[in-house]
Image (tube, rainbow, N blue to C red; front, side, top):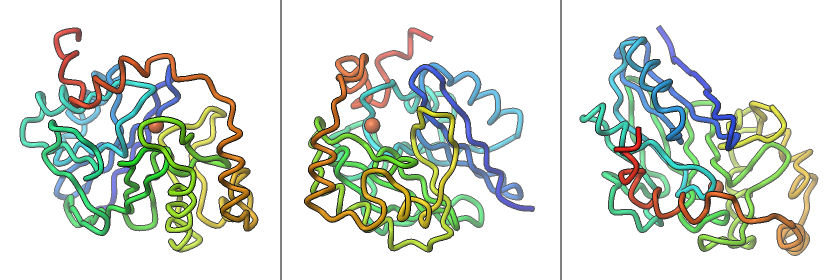
Length: 235
Ligand SMILES: [Fe+2]
């Protein structure tokens, strides 16, 4: 008996959703579930006979709408988890740096990683870390809205880099089809911070990102501040 680990993908926003469960106790968690793919995720949870314990968000997303609230409506014992830095009334648990949660025999440890947004949290589970938009494969999250700060993100990524080199990195997005990286790879090859880039250079690289606003930001952020509750009736 072991860890059930199912990476899932939402192709419109290139978002990864991660379903993890203890195969013996069947207790499960889901990280960064997306509105558009909620029926797929509900179907998989039911098919595998899992008991959803935690619905976890790495942050309040700007590019897609969460399915947290609809999932909680379906699996009423599940608790919605967000970082304490998020002004979100729909969360059951506002988690702090170093706090632990469990599912079956597995432990989740919250690591506060602000910078992309002020409330970003990464989650360490054994030899895996779920980094949200703090640390992406060969890149990092933008810092130009939702309380973002390149200076804070530099510290957060240094904090992530204290994890064991072999730790596998699972980000919230990848736009090139990559699925997993590792701490040692990103320390060496990350195009924003790898190879020992210093704080000033990192901040200047982040500030030079030339990105348009996410198409859904004016819909997604208010919707996600209520965990997607206001779109339940839309399916
Ligand atoms: Fe984000």
